[in-house]
Length: 180
Image (cartoon, rainbow, N blue to C red; front, side, top):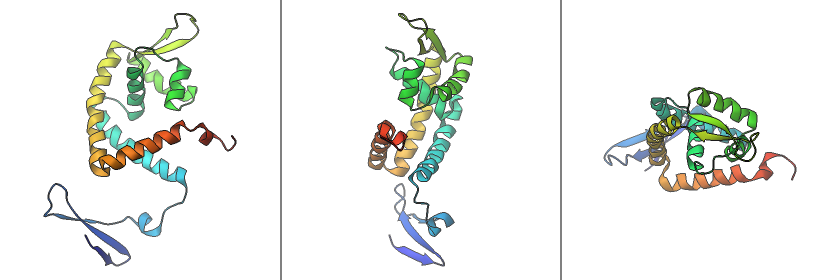
């Protein structure tokens, strides 16, 4: 579709995938027209806030926030060998105090429990309770709506590439500090 210049903005015309006869006009925001910060962290934070809005909106019907769902999902994945607080924090790329802050409401609501380890009673494991498994199943349906929406808007191939890139960043411990 053509690019139309109107005033200070360039407008891109795009055909709707659902209705090819319909043409949408995409107007860039002032920030897009003026240029963006070259900071990768700023771009990542903006994208994170937008994604959080989408997933929180979907998960609200299940009474969850995206941060809570991420914890329940990870505990569901590790149900056969429940992680310790430290292991869960490492997997979620959180410090232990932030994890504790996020676990408190889940524990209060009976969705997770901290249980003493079999060999070392001081090492507490985080487990999903029966109520937590039911809440996770409810949240999973809501999460799927947000996931499908993102894939539809962003494109499945682009979304898969983005996930792979983001996981590569999350797993690269060299990016945690300025020194190796």
